[in-house]
Image (cartoon, rainbow, N blue to C red; front, side, top):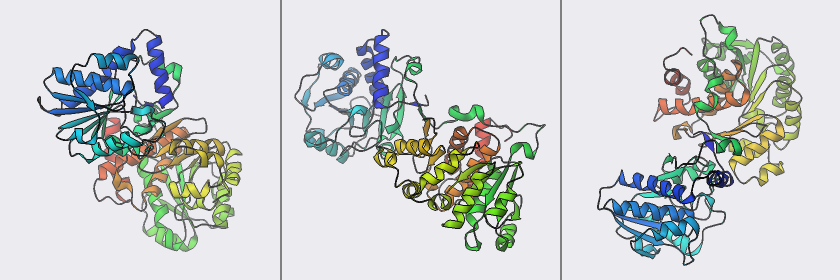
Length: 497
């Protein structure tokens, strides 16, 4: 279930299922059953349940859940928003409900042990105002658990945006597949615990829809992930070169180098200015150190084809010297991971960077956080108009020809061909200095082992999230590489990586 469906794609999945012979009311009954089961698992029989229902199909799901919970012995009341008539399957579901229906008003929520939010679902396309906004604010003000049907009301299913005001759910039950809005911030923090229920839509409809957005899970990329073989050696696992900054900023490159080594690169070399050799060598054991000053020497160093990936930018300095280093890397043969200062040095001049990327056959990964992305692409109209983080990353990838890793609690990986993945496993403890440098090293390690660029970036982002969880509370960036072996043991069942 790694596919993520936009609002339009989910509507098409429903349409295709019904066209194939599945009755709409049966889909609604199964959806309502899943919601009722979620509530019943967490509350004793006899609890008072308030079901806040809108006038669309989301409300219809709520009526089904209300009926089933009442049949199980719960005290259920439907709070209906709006006076308009229900239509289609939602009307049928409402007719099957014989219990009380009252006007959805803030005071009607008093005394509820749990609330089922069945107002709007994922298809909301306009800001919530008026009585609906007041009811949502009243739901959020209660101390009882709130269960969202499909998506918390007020969250856009495609973008994750809050449309004025949104329910802060304790749990969300969605159907068939998640939407991007379940993972993109701020939608993700409104969802609480998310469960996905199968309601009878055949998986074959995905072949017709052709989704291009995925949750970043091993199923997406594990088939490309290398596992060392007994007849292999360090050169078969690739050689990563990490370019170090000056004397006062060598730490970032060392973090990237350590990350690359732990994630599986066979060799890692710090290409360092000669005046930093002593400090870099003293702080490195398995990571090699070589003196490399300036763009010309870096070009010469990369002429050895065995050095097949370069990481450039962490702690490297901003300005023309860094631009020269980037141009030297992109004119050479290795795959490249451009991070931090390598991106900021092209602030507002992304076309120059894109031209150099598109002139080479080897892949390039760009790994900006939001600030770096904004500085680099502030003149890109497509990114400025994009309605979501997902759309911005896609626009940048298409325009540059690079795989873009737009970092954050909802890191998006976007490929030039339109594929994209959203992380769902980030730890909040990853928001610490140097964490992104380690991620750049992870990316380089998978590229060095010759994974395709999109899959390599996805694997690195997933590994980064899992390492953050493994290291746990209070982690610092140095902890992340050391958490990798435990993550790999889980991923590969104890196999060697």
